Length: 193
Length: 172
Image (cartoon, rainbow over all chains, first blue to last red; front, side, top):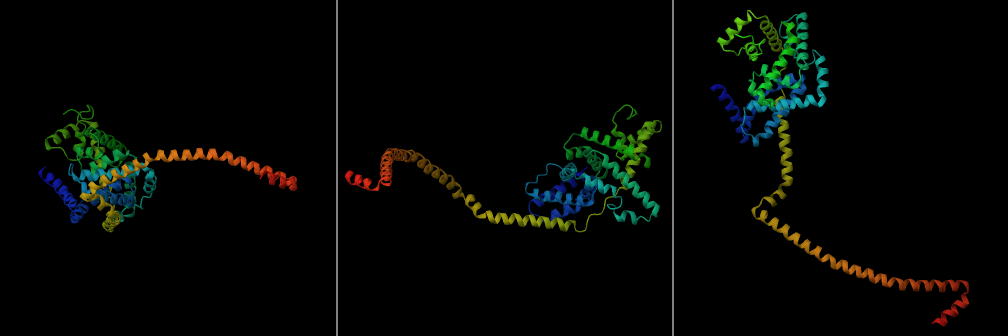
């Protein structure tokens, strides 16, 4: 707990240095959290180019807000609140039609490294691609907030309380979101066991 | 242990078990329960499949030019902001100077007083214009009469140029 708290303080401390004009601290925060934000956004919108565009906007907003930054919450809570807000806006703006089109392109948005560097046979690669496609489709069927909650819970290993602060809801609401989401995913993915 | 699924008690217990976040004592108790509870065992198997599937879903690596693009946007925003601040600087200085910050309200008040004075003066101008209108109204009928006389004279001149001329001489 002490180590976690120290990590929290370090991110907030870095951001306070950015507030004081230390651009190098912004670079450190960017390197530390860039991948997590992009990967979260990628799994939310399921389009890598859009995810990077939204991630740019996330860090731009962080930088713009440096003058008024106050460490009232964990830095990652604030960061993912911005990211979730942008992702939800993008999805609700109806651009999810484009996301669905990309979802159907099973290989276009697949990282080449994933498929080619595993030493898999052609058949194994095809099975893998079908599996990933099913996972992406299962996630895409989740309502947006359930999707965000699952991604933060599974990939960022956030506690219920932090997810609640990101989504601006209660802990019990987060638990409800997660249970419904995982129930849906179990129905769709249990056959993969 | 009571079945978390059947009794709807502390259901996140199973979720915490699947994510490996249970303490060892609770985990062992739950595993003993799962050995005899088909519903919990089915939950555990299904959830494990979900975790493994989600683990297999790796994200693409970040673009190599991500940072460069971000910093370029930051620089562009800063350049735009500085251009705007340079444009507004003369006006900002006017309002930021302590003396001016007191003088501006006074100047504004003075302007308002002058404007009020001008407005108060307006009724006299309106009175003069009303008088002018009255003068015009009194003058115009005379002018109309003379014009009508002239027109009658012209008409007579057209009908009988010689008698019209004589009439004119006699009237003079």
